[in-house]
Amino acid sequence: MSETVEKKPRSAWSVYVPAIAFFILAGVFALMLTQEGRDVSALPSALIGRDAPQTILPPLEGLKDAGGAQIAGFDPAVFAGNITLVNVWASWCAPCREEHPYLSALSGDPRVQLMGLNYKDKTENALRFLGSLGNPYDFIGVDDSGRAAIDWGVYGVPETFLVGQDGKIKYKFTGPLTPEAIEKQLMPEIEKLAAN
Image 1 (cartoon, rainbow, N blue to C red):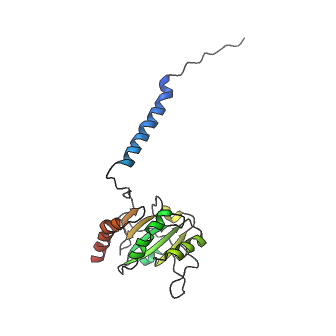
Image 2 (tube, one colour):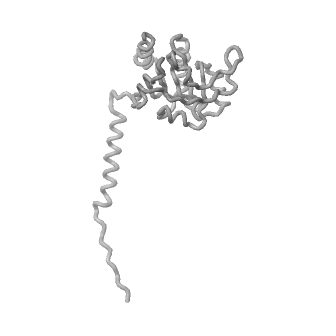
Image 3 (cartoon, rainbow, N blue to C red):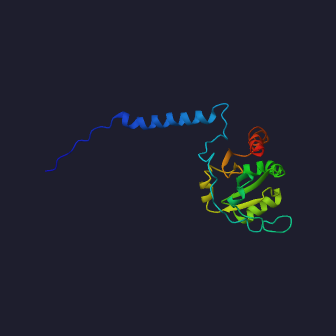
């Protein structure tokens, strides 16, 4: 003789509570993202004030300077004594194309050296990108695996870091650089570093 076990009916709350919690959290996140006056480039970075990651990356093979020499890769040794703008970019990144003219303009500032971190890109695509838009970088390292970007705390491309003469990260900008961001945020930081 088999006994039948009665199932207890599920409480209505056990079904609705997860759904209600999800919608409340989604609403909070949506509110935070659309909050007026919020600076979307102001993502926090735990690296500000700390030594820049000591990741060495190979050069973008085939990228030559005006004299025909291979442009050097990514080596943190060049931070010492220099103000360095580290820009994380990729040829497949549409916002990287938008900010490129502003990087080209910055490359004319003798106080700053530009270092590109080419993120998860194909060599031929990166070369074509720089061939058509110009190369603003003094150094370019290739980050095929994305490991260097993790070391730098990158959320996505493009991102830009300012490294001081002491090798410490002084400033981070998330998203494509704009004339306003350069004028109001980046240049004051460069001027502070150059005054030291």
